[in-house]
Image (cartoon, rainbow, N blue to C red; front, side, top):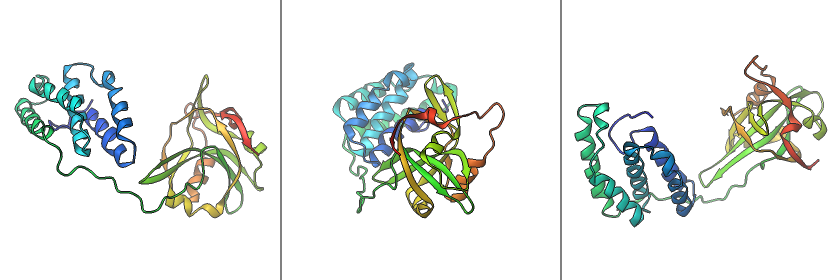
Amino acid sequence: MAIDGVKIIDSDDGHDIYNAIVERYKDGVSVDTIISEILSEEQNFCTDEFYTEIYWTAVAYSLWKIGHLSADIKQKALDIIAQGPHEFWLEIDDKALKQRQKVLDKLATQLQSENPKPLKVRKSKTKREPHFKVGDVLAVKFEKNYGAIFVSEVDQSPRKIEYHLACTRLLQKEKPTMEEFLYSQIACRKDNTNFGIDTDCWFNHKDLGLLLDHLEVIGSVELYPCKLWKLAPAGTLEDIYEEIIDNPRIGKLRLIDTYELVKEVIEK
């Protein structure tokens, strides 16, 4: 784990905890869910006393930041702080122990009173509906031919809607049918029943909206669980085309039949 400094969020674990609490709170995830999930990760973070200090101080600070610090978590963090900074801080810098102590003292003061300006989540004035749903199979109209892709994931929150579009290798003159989609190929890693899609375009709601005239739902499927190995930011029709024609690199990408990813065809 990288340690960039002595502040509460100056480490990889600190950043991860802050994002899991504060950023998800901004996305509209309920506080109860956030607290339950971050506490369920305690054993993964608290592998020794040093990391225990990192974990509890970051959790308490992040919850204080959003104005939802519970009494039990506050007390746990204060007990950790009362023990003083772990001596491992000296391994980072000979002045780090004293600097960390000042940070902990400041945090203890913060935790013992409510945050006067807790982070507020802005409510969206208009509720946007996603353009597509997970499992939608899309024909893509390019200038001279068609491709076939499917929606592998939709990430929706009050602040954003993002889409992951998995690109098959199909490219032909006529609009593809569902049968042609199913018997196309896709770059994908396969381990027993686990799949990792290697060709994925990641669009935001606005950019994908500009391409709707080129996209047509031709059916929908239920997919087996898939991981997205390649998260490539995209914004244009050309980005999709490049993913379709990208040649597999020997030893890195493997082509499988697209139907292997499909648990059930819902709509033809």
